[in-house]
Amino acid sequence: MTPDATDLSILKMLSRDATLGAAEIGRALGMAQPATWRRIKRLQDAGIIAGRRVGLDNAALGFGVTVFLGIRLATKGRTSLEEFERAVTAIPEVQLVQHVLGQFDYRLRIVARDIADFERILRRRIMTLPGLGQVEANVMLSEERRPGPLG
Image (cartoon, rainbow, N blue to C red; front, side, top):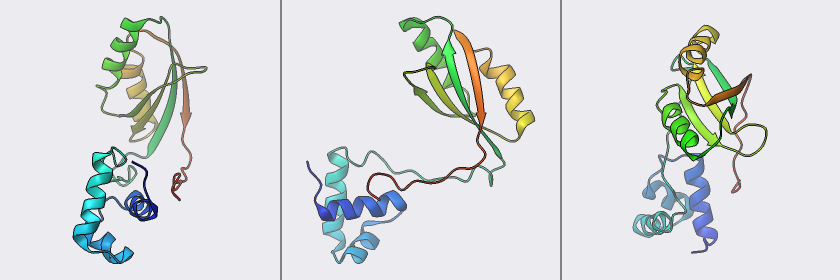
């Protein structure tokens, strides 16, 4: 399925606010709610809309520090990758696990209440992960929200 101009308009609106309903989107685009709903459903069925997410403000929830970790495993192999992934995804403060090519094998996004909390997470949870080798931490100072490929 190739999205047309109307589909792209729907996708832009949903990418800005995933809570919008078909009626609101339809009104903005001059379409009836049922027609808009059918288009959204078709985009979901085609896998173009992979889900809807609510963005949370980590700082407002008490998580004032975000750290990106680059992790290189000490040993490589299918078993160690699966074991590492299973263990790291069980850590609640780890928001994102990316298996990447380059200097590191994995990139993690971790949230913590403060630097002391991050140190506790690092010492007690990250440094005990199976197959862990090199770790590099980058503390996020600020973040800019990019609109994505649809603008």
